[in-house]
Length: 358
Length: 139
Image 1 (tube, each protein chain N blue to C red):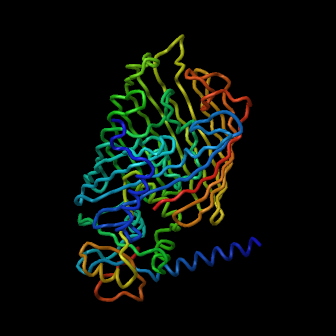
Image 2 (cartoon, rainbow over the protein chains, first blue to last red; image 1 turned 45 degrees about the vertical axis):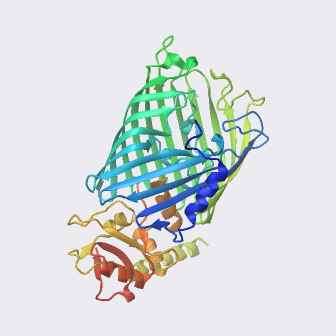
Image 3 (cartoon, each protein chain N blue to C red; image 1 turned 90 degrees about the vertical axis):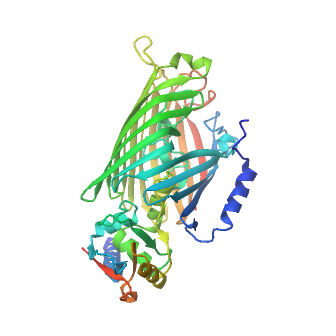
């Protein structure tokens, strides 16, 4: 039953080919319908242990993924968009990523309803589209969506969102309110309510503050202690993207569950700072990231990377990261984002990827 | 060496500014609009402004990559390189928040399209303009 609505990689390729056949224009437009897609082809390997996404010293191509997107203007104010995606970590099972309608109430205000990408984090809404950011994997402490732990971000939610945008000079101010239910692999987050404030100075400086809260509903026995408990997150982020220099930094806190012995062991914080420099088709960058859970587990990562634009639709990435997990075991076992206990204190991970959008 | 780099950069900026003057923003002759700010043109071409002052929805037309008009328009008026533009639209497309302007064609095709669409807006080289369309003054 679970395979209904899912397709293997052969089906994905066939679907892509069928859709591409009648679309000869670069905008992929048929009337008012637009098709777009993305593809990431990645290879990651590390020096020790089994890391998130089954990365080991044998290498992993599980970060390979693709998505297809359709949007249509139903009438002057109503728009429908949907996206399906297949990921190596899910054995390329093609699933609905999001699908929602957007209604422009006026020039400044829009209402969205349906299954919507989770709007917390500067990169989260397009986190699968590697072409849009410098890394092969965005900082995992912040963007990790490990089902067993507290999370700052989620994949998507079912519900509504209201976006209000206004300008002071050329600076765009955005206010968003969203609410609904989040499906997670071991249950749901019900009564989700969130708010976001953003500032955008001509896409050169973008800043966001967000907060959201919900009540957890847990389906699995080992985590039943969290059933009915509140999960709240606070995040802040900034991106400075000038002609040559780029800086990106985010910090977030998650407060999860009840106090045990005067503290909440599942509370967590995560943050990162990335600085990069663009020279023509090349961009080099360095990133420091930290993920701490009050129960004692987490990890620190420092990484360097290089991105080269291949065309205006594609890019090549090379990355080297050093991961240092905390020595406290997670409840599910393993250190940091490793599913086991590596022999070494510092683990090196290297990766190459080709990203494209079409 | 530094001086040479600065000279080349200044020359490039001046060239773009001069070229931007050679590109004109056009609408249908029946459109009441006579002038528009560069800031509003940027917002319209980045999907942040969707309506004319009278409340009619703007139908935005674009030119394909590689044309001189597009190069001058995005370089001199919108202020984005093709790579930054692709990244910008990818962020909107793959979150369902917007899609780029429809690519209509080169100057003469765009001109004919605007002449036939009362709510259209696009851009062409000044040398291609005639009475079938209205040029908006950029302020």
